[in-house]
Length: 330
Image (tube, rainbow, N blue to C red):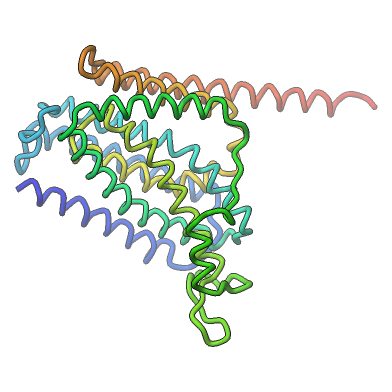
C-alpha cells in the first residue's frame, strides 16, 4: 500500500509544477524580487505543511508507512528527520544559486527566459536525484560500510570548499556542451524560450538549450555532495526523496530572490563548510555514537543562523562605512 503514497506524492508535485508553468508563469516575464520572495514563502509553507503531514502519516502508519523502516518509528522522529533533511538540502542549494547566476551571466541569458530554463532544469534534477537516491539507498542497505565512505566524502568536500577561491564557470569545457555542438548546429541568437530550432533547414539547438545542459550537469555535481548529506539525517527513502524534492522546488524562487544579493552573504559559505563537516562526522559516528535528530537539527540551524547573522552585520557595517565616506567634506 505504501506505493500509493509515493504515487500520490509524485502526482501532487507534477500538479504543482504544471500549475506553476501553465498558469502562474505561462508568459515569459522578468521575475521581480518581490514575486520571488512570495513564491519562496509559498514553497517554504508547503514544506512546513508537509512536515505536519509526515508527523501524522508516520504516527498513524498511514498505508503502512513507517512500519517498514528500521530507522523511523514515530511521527515526531519522522517529522524532525524530514525538517532537518529539508534544511540541509536547502542550505546546500544556496551555493548552487551562485553558480547558476554565473552560468546565466556567461551565456547572457535575458532575464525573461531564465525562469523557464530553471523550471526544466529542476524537472531534470528531480529525475536524476530520484535515481541517485534509489542507488544510494540500495548501496547502504546492501553495504553498511558505504555510510563511512559518504562521511569521508562530505568532510573532504567541506575542506575543498573552505580552501576554494571564487568559483569560475567555463561551460565550453562541459562535455555535454561539446557533445551537443558536435551533433547539432547552434543558432547565433536566442529564439524566445525555444530550446530547439532549425538552421539552414537542419535541426539545431539554441543557446538556451546549452544553458539547460550546463545547469543540469552542474546540479549532478552538487547532488554528489547533497545526496550523501541527507543519508546522515535519515535513511528512510520516502523522507530522503521528499525533503530533496521540496528543497529543489524552492530553488528557482530562491535564485531570483537572492542571486543579486549573494555578495552580501559573505559568511554563508563558511556556514556550509561547517554544515558539511558536521554531517560528515555524524555519518562516521552513526554506528557507534549516534547523534539524536533533535540535536542535529539544532546544530544545523544554529550554524546557518550564525552565518546569516554575521553576514548581515558585516553588510551593515560596510554600508555604514561607505555612508561615512560619502558624507566627509572634500
